Amino acid sequence: MQNGELARSTQRLIQMLRPEHVGTAAQAAMTWFKPPPATLGRLGALEVRLAEGKREVKRAQKLRYRVFYRDGTAIADAATLLARRDKDAFDRICDHLMVIDHAAKPSMSGRQPVVGTYRLLRQEVAERNGGFYTENEFDIASLIDRHAGLRFLELGRSCVLPRYRNKRTVELLWHGIWTYVRRHRLDVMIGCASFEGTDPGRLALPLSFLHHYAQAPETWRASAHPSRRVEMNRMAKEAINPKAALHELPPLIKGYLRLGAFIGDGAVIDHQFGTTDVLIVMPVSAISARYIEHFGVDATRHAA
Image 1 (cartoon, rainbow, N blue to C red):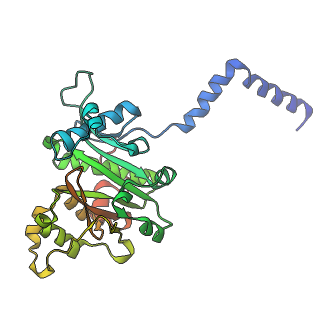
Image 2 (cartoon, helix red, strand yellow):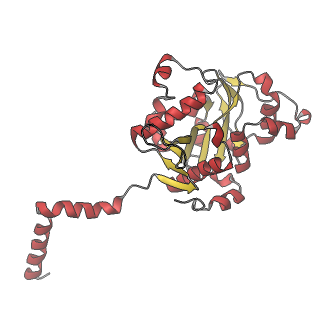
Image 3 (cartoon, helix red, strand yellow):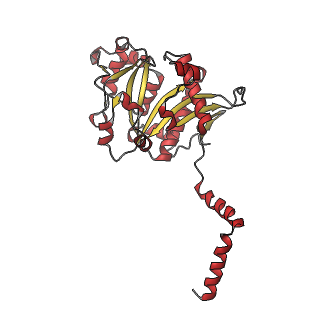
């Protein structure tokens, strides 16, 4: 570079670094680092999106309180009753998926109602913050160790308002999860799914069906902690009526099975929520091809 060119280049750099130009340059640079949009998809008036900020997380927590405590069988402590929100320490580190109905009557604050939600926790975030929620009930450490090269996502706190428990809402929730999985390049989904009730004897048929027909192969298997484990194998396989058993499965568990999920070994009684929990293990590689085609390999079916 000649002396004249060097001088001109130096002068241009000095000009860019002057106060009146710094803001403009920084703004231009920041356009290359825009965070991904919160909206993950739309289906008619319904939108699936990630909660942004504490206020939106509180909206998801209020929906969970309504479904789990007010209308469900969960037992609230004093703090939960006062707050009228289902919350725990994991909420701070999770992403929260919300379905919003833009055609519904707005609340007093002018916001459209949240009608469905899911809580999402990526492995790298869990490992920085003490682990997964699922570890309270199931020994998943060995499962993760066996697949050390894969990235896990925990699904939890799923709930939908009764009038929205239909194909459209569930499909949009799954579209949101699939978009999130593709965006973060995740490989395996895990989480607890629940039966209402804490008497496993009354759940003998569906629990036995899951044990005999949907148990994870050894490489994907994880067991309930011995101190909390409840036997799922309560009926012989030949005594099971599969059609009747499927009828008794909660819609969420049936949905997981249709996608290609496996079930862990043993169940756990959750007395706070009044449920019997089973472990869901769903490798992305095991998801039925027809569902991937339905939502699109790159989650394009209901893209916003």
